[in-house]
Image (cartoon, rainbow, N blue to C red; front, side, top):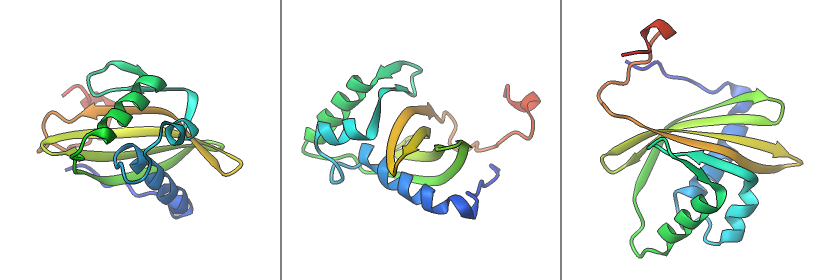
Length: 144
């Protein structure tokens, strides 16, 4: 069984702030204009999709705006959030996203400057076997 990661207490407020911002990408009721997305992403933001393809900031924003224009919004569920500081003012937020039957592990790198948060990078990795949530104890076990 996958070991549960727990964000340290000193980062819980940061984690909550980043979760609110992360949902902007997944819920149309939170942000509906291109300008809002541009203000939340670094100019050089990019994403590695679950397919392994790389996407530019403009492509991601176009995709999100198109998704929001559709009448029926997708009902997605996110869980298992974990936040860690990886450098001063740089935080990694990871979580699991359920999109119907599709499950992905997500990671977003956030940068904070003067109380303004910018997403710098995002990645989604497809979970092929949802029933196999094992987290190997050492890299020697990672080839399974």
